Length: 102
Length: 102
Image: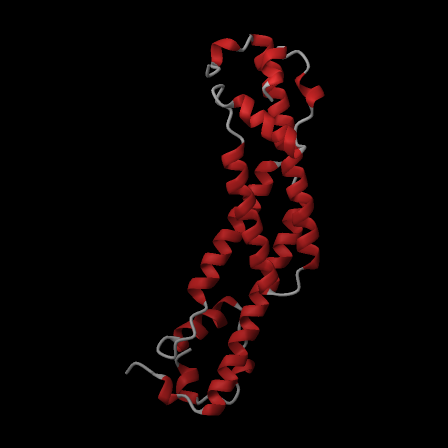
């Protein structure tokens, strides 16, 4: 059964939204750290456009990854947990059946 | 008359190529300085993607601007001088008729 918005209680939605934002902010912070490191080490135009390529790739990747539709949210969260951007403790309060699928 | 490659002597070509590269490097260096400054001041994801937008814009702008075809070189050089990326002294040795058009 595909989960939909109605299956999420009001409090679950609040927890989910908070965890989602925290994961997004963690990932953006890590990208920013990479950018600062790369920018400090750039020596020529090749390095400058490599930094642009890196940011283009990360923007496309995060745009695709961070999808808040309830129909796909369990898969999104599973991926974020697997990649380390979301922590299981951020999801405390969400029903066990949903958590088991993540 | 549209100038073409044959109108440029071997030594003029060498000077032109050197001046062109120097201008490109100056402009890239200025972009890099902006990037480092922006990266240091970024506070959130909005700032991160603004930096990406800035780099996209600058890459498109430089790709369009730095055109080494001899048929357009005087116009390219005139623009680079006007914008401050190329210095007239970089072009010493290039014939007066070409310089007058820049």
